[in-house]
Length: 557
Image (tube, rainbow, N blue to C red; front, side):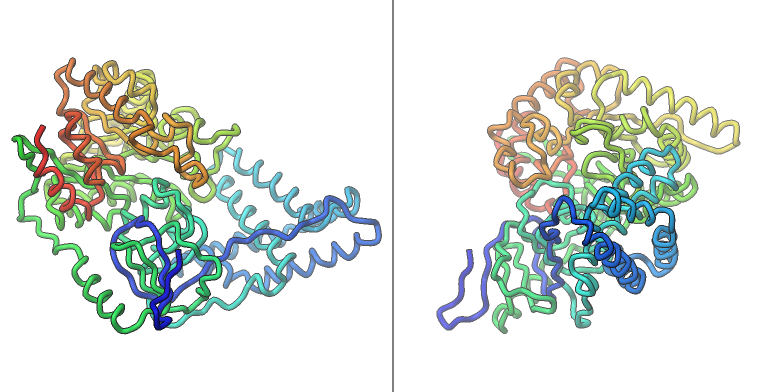
């Protein structure tokens, strides 16, 4: 809905809060790119015309390559030359482009379709490689394919000047993808606005974890928002103000100041959520980047209940080596000052594939090689490297390991076998390590929920991921806004299956070994419902801590 004040003041657009807070900045608009209607075939007379268009588009890409890489990838300066060089290798591959021309000549394909066909085939071959470097090159091919196709359609406009003022920016996009959120983080965007309504998607989770004020479901059509348009993102009241005036600016500045997290103080003890009827609920932090560890102290949380390690790879496009991962974890341990740390192993697959890690072998990637499946069935060495770093970093530290996408006890048995190999290797290398870490599993697959009793027999704890669990219960992709109406917690059967998990824990006398780390735990009403089910440990978005405490303090069970 769009509203203006009676005196035709600022345009106000309604939106739903994805990540709470208030932000001021100039718009940086990313338009969706949809290719013009391209014919299936061309006539013989058009062959040379299409080949000439291909050459012109390729040269445009070459001329504007560096600005494209800076705009789309937002790399660190030291990575810019490497990315550009990798792209140039593709552009300089004469036999490859000769194959594209053959598609135009022999199959009478228009240049756009010929480019798409050859690049898709090449990237698929690279993605199937067991070599990490070659898989990373697949992403280069996809990127160049897209930008050549854009140059074919838009010409030089595909590389329009996007230079904005020195003012803080608000990223305005029609979609909500993890890669877009990561770019917003890299660019230091103060706010985020999207028309997408996939509020439980991984992109939404990243926004909340980064504490970037964000609104979703905003009607951007005919809003008049362009690059440089001043915006106020009011992600407290659910409103986007276009070209805000002085009264709005005064409110925004005060709200921004009030919303800043408290100073981190390791000397202040953790503050759990006390129930009115007695007892308490332990509160831990969800983080996805080492820089967020201090938030655990700022909001007086017990420790980190979920460290999503994927960003260590997504940011660089490569898996850090053992020593690099070891140093990252040790820095986290130091920041947490004795508080516990639960590290989830890389959870790649489906919509969470970083650059060059494409691993879809079926029509439903969310049902394929995700999480621990990917490690066990395709990349055990990647798992060994991560476990080696964790075991080494756990010396003198309270660290637990959390396994994603566990389905059966056989997954756990396989991981324990890998851990034995890792321990033997570390011993042979004379490395100190801690062999006594607690091992847990994510409960996000319905089969794991129904088998919670069996899992608890061989594990130290279980952590319920409500976002994926609800996705699989409802057969509704959490990244697809078109089916978000099915992601209703009351109708999904989520509470019923959580009760099954808690009953299994009670029968085993293990209620205290069940935690919930999904977004439901960060919602005050959701936290109340979880506490009613007997959950006494939550891992939440740090800035939700005060609201969750307040909601639980009035709960009588």
